[in-house]
Image 1 (cartoon, rainbow, N blue to C red):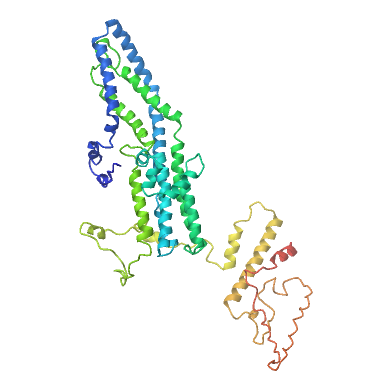
Image 2 (image 1 turned 45 degrees about the vertical axis):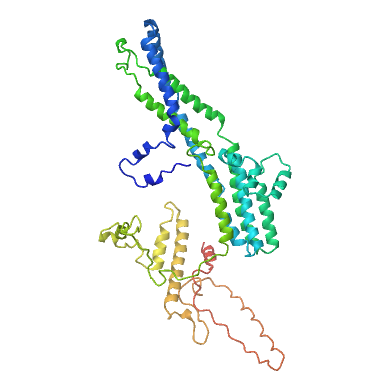
Length: 512
């Protein structure tokens, strides 16, 4: 059973984790006490031999060996190797849990797409979910020792109700030397296609959605199989194990207390129990034990996944969803806040203080500025007319070192642009311009001063003859036909808007 202590650490307080140190089940003490006793026993045996068994000459040799092991034991990179290894194992452990095949999404799609309140519709839905549960059982009994002990043979799977005897014959007659956990998924697809042909699934979109959820479910089963097949490389596991064991083998000798009378450096105190060495062993060896427990969470350790519990839960929930809850709806009623303009659920006395806390509006909501800093500032050059401001703005982009010819050409272009914008502005804001048209529908010549529109400012060019208009259509034959009346086209009113294309480029070429 998984050890859960989440409620104990719901709130951070003084000594919050200290309550967890007294737990035995799932603790590091339960995992490590044997190794710790072995290390302490070997250490005390060497210490007793040094003090009471060895001769003086042998003691001098042993003391040199202790100094040598203590000096070079730090060269073993235990922290570096263990840190990367445990990080890899924890990441792999959590990903394996995410790959557990849960039928919740699949059963919701089945109950919404496979219709029919009769016995055959019920049979379709229950069989589809039973196939999904059978696929999960087959893959879990392949990777989990606890599930395999529950279903050691296919006969146990049949007796448990996940598979019928006819389905068992088809399953065993399928010639394949590989794991056949995927066979129930194929049965699921075939049965869904049959339900579509019978009209139980009403359109192809619903069938597509159902098969997509099945593929997600089957993909998780496949990932469990691959996690069980592809382990962390054995080389890495061996390197970590050898690093830890060799380090503490050197510590057995190098951390011995020597006779203070010999005057060795850092050996001024003689103790029988190496307290800090034992703590170091507890941390490093415990770190290795954590990786040992998490590298395969489908065993029977205290913190391994509850696979049998998940099988029972998934099977029961899926059958309830697609059978008893099919088309089961409560009467539609108005909710409690139907006429409320601001819906808010009530608070209990233990949570009433939350009403006094303002809602979060943003990290800059409480910033205050002086009144003078909140005044808008106009940009330089925006007080004059539109044409002047645009010309001044464009003048800023003129290169400083251009020649007189380039400067003159750019100056003429800016002058033309100013006059054109000025004419357009006046035509759009004042109705007194002559370009606005006459009451008789004729448009007099424009006098806005635009060299592109005023005939007196542009080069004389022969005006092309006006294009011939279309002939009026002939009257339709029949008694209801009426004589055709030509509708006069409106005359152009004012200069072209600034967003339409203009021949300004041609004018600039002529001026150049």
